[in-house]
Image (cartoon, rainbow, N blue to C red; front, side, top):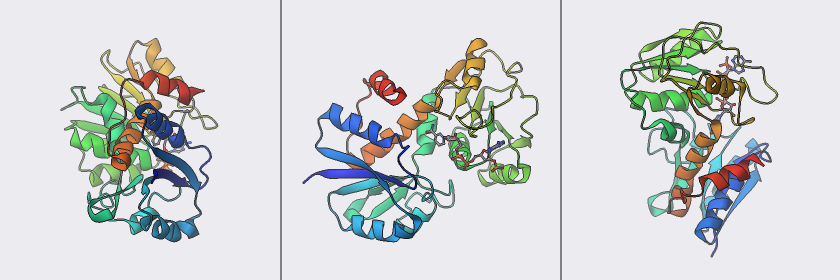
Length: 269
Ligand code: NAP
């Protein structure tokens, strides 16, 4: 019997999940497989029906365009539908039931878990799916205030209220407030997208700049932050963090944490 997990999406060839999960399976010497599957929206029903009946299938990561639709095929034990609103992982729970969860919030929060953020101000750029996971995590971190920079102010204000966060919404061109954490949760700065035009001067010396974009890994935002000698967190950290939570849910064992550099090198090739 060979246990396996998958990542499903459409398209899917760009996904880095197979590289990450196979790397860990190898490192641990586990008998298991991890494949990418291109699943069309109209085949999602069949996919989950077939996999639910296959005892070797341990679960799947879920990416665009299935992150919301997949909720209809799983048990939502953590009430993800009413919080983050989308899942990125399906795994087998007690008695083999398919459970949906979202590991992005935990993956985002891992690298900043030791920062003293209680009562501080955080700035978040973007009001899409990644931003929802970030706001959910910041809501659990007892953050003082969130300033959300977005092009759609109404949508952004709705998010602050949805996550019960104190804060305000500003346009993308606004001057940054004094804040302990700046998170780019928009695609700005990503290969093929517009640049993120932002002046980091107002940030204090202890501020941390976190860019969720991982293609390229060293974004203009991170370069600018390094030039100011601010602490930075890049998008690979969240990518690997969310995968680590999913890996343990699939295969029942945590991935090794002493091979991080080798994994990063592999992902940057
Ligand atoms: P999304 O759901 O499409 O949301 C994108 C957000 O950015 C939306 O609020 C959108 O505004 C805004 N936006 C898009 N283009 C813009 C522009 N030209 N000017 C101003 N605002 C713009 O995307 P997502 O899933 O949240 O992903 C966002 C980024 O995070 C991507 O680069 C993705 O690769 C990255 N990400 C990284 C990880 C990781 O593990 N490191 C995980 C998830 C996502 P509207 O609301 O007005 O549409």
